[in-house]
Length: 475
Ligand code: GLC
Image (cartoon, rainbow, N blue to C red; front, side, top):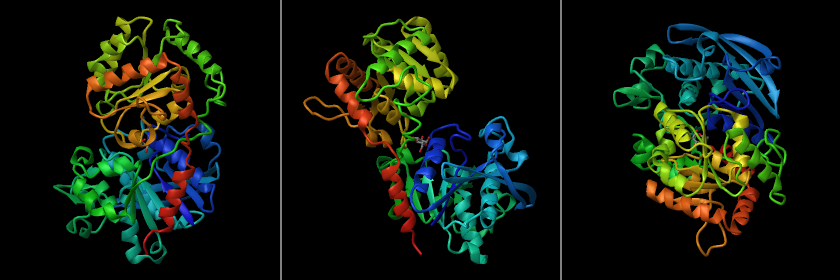
């Protein structure tokens, strides 16, 4: 089968979040099997020269987006067994950032339409087009629309994956004909229409041949209005073709045995190197060099749905448990200021790095003892898996993929890879932080660390599930 993976970001080319990690590691995992796998991305201004130098210019076409007539270049390179295509249009993609521009709707409508029109120009016409999140949500509609008239599109099947249902791609109703350039029927029949506007995510859910999301628990939770952000009715109507498939992580890149960014490599059998990483982290962060003080780490976007309000509510009580706290991330100014202030109040005990850094994140995964992720909602979450792989014991809320990837340590039970609390409540979180700190000071800690380190977070199993989904698409 020919698979085309369509996404608005993919590591190592361009990244703002977990979507890029998935889009960068699932395609090569799929390519390890029988299928031929390609990926396609916008050619953002941010994509570095290192990659541009490896690209071959393939061709250009013009893409009509309603009354717009837009240049569309196509480049490609080979990486890890996958052909990566890049869609070039400087007006849309040479910007300061990937998203957050005033015309994001138009930029990604262009990307989706461009991909649809480029399909016959790729090395291999795909059998399955796998789209991800709202930025690519118009594509299943375009493919169905083109298939009515064009023979070459009739056999193509589409899969749509929800990484986060909060972002839905809302457009005004005029955009049906004025931007998307689609027949008004797509609105009249209720595919694009949601209330008074166009909702691209809804359209993708209704037109894709299969829908997936990134963990089984999140798939269940999406039936609940608390998590579905208004789309619970649509989810109910597609539930017979929707599945939750837990993400993996790139276990080659995230490997404490080989990671070049950390002070000393180590493994589950030889954990001594982790103590060296901890000392290095304390020194680098200006924390007291105390080897028996547990370091609790947060590596996260500093936004409400990641549970930062819980941390703020009980920050002093967390410090009273005797931990050092390391925070890495950016986000809402209120949280950024809060953690800077906390560092000021606890010199040598709190380090707030209000930035984004891949290398620093790895040094924290390696040097910390405990990892806090109290998300309000979490479709999958990757950091908890990375933390476990580096022997850093996660403390998570029981939601979405956190629930599917962390096994709770319970008294008297000889299993568990971390600590889990159920209610979204600062007191409940604090109480499991206390349990985790107590475990840290006992002999049992190493056992829990090792269980996490040897757990299988590779893509192997989930890639097999996706292959199964592709192979069993209807018609
Ligand atoms: C989104 C979700 C996150 C998930 C990631 C990759 O960023 O918020 O939970 O891990 O996508 O699927």
